[in-house]
Amino acid sequence: MRDINDHVSIRSLRFSMRLMGMWPVEDARDQFISNILLFYTISTVMIAFTIEFIDFYYSWGNLQAISYNLPGTITVFIELVKLIKFTLNRSEVVNLNAHIERTFWKMTYETADLQILEKCNRKSLRIIIAHLFFSQCVVWLYVSIPIVESAGKNASDRTLPLALHFNFPYTQSPYYEILFILQIGFARILQHFRLPNQQFYEFRYESKTEFFQEE
Image (tube, rainbow, N blue to C red; front, side):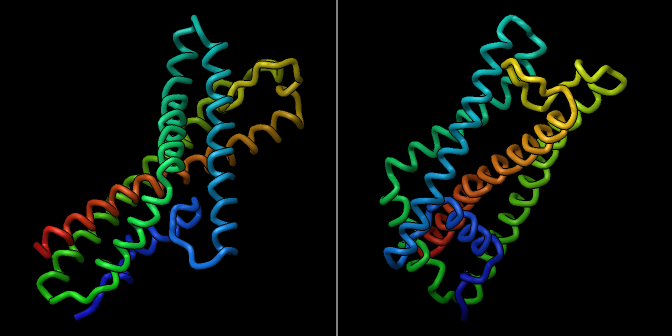
C-alpha cells in the first residue's frame, strides 16, 4: 500500500499551480508571494490581450491579417476569462486543492486501486506531452511566418510575430532584432500559462476517478 503523491502528473500540476498562485499556502510570507505571482500572471495576460486586440482593430477589413490575428486573440481572451473567474473564486479553488491533496493524494491505496490510478497518471502524462508539443508548434509557427515573409525583402518591409501600429522604426536594426526576441519570449511565457489550466482539468479527471473508485 502506498499513496499517489509522487505521481509525475500530480507533481507537475502542483508545481505549475504554485507558479500561478493557485495552490494553498501555509504562512503569510507564502501568501504574499502567491499574490504577487497571481498579479503578475493576470497583468501579463491582460497586456497580451491588449496587444492582440489593438492588432485586431487595425487588421479590420484585411481578411488575411484577421485570420492570422484571430486565433491568438481568442486564445488570450479565453485565458483572461479563466483567470478572472479563478480570481473571483480563488478561495474555493484553493480549498478544493487542499481537500483533494489531503483526502485523495496522501491516502494509501490497495494494489487494485493503485493500478487504476497509475493508469490515470500515464494518461495524464500523455495529455501533458501532447499539450506541450502542440503549444511549441504554435509558437514556432508564429515565429517562422515573419521569417519566411521577410526573406529577401528590404529592411523597411520586415514584419514581426506581433504587429506594431505606432510610428517607430521597429523594422530597422537593432530594434527589429530586439523586438523579435522579446516577442518570442513573451509568446513562450504566455504559452506556459496555459499549462496549469490544462493540468487542472486533468486534476479534476484524476480526482473524480479516485472518488468513483472509492464508491
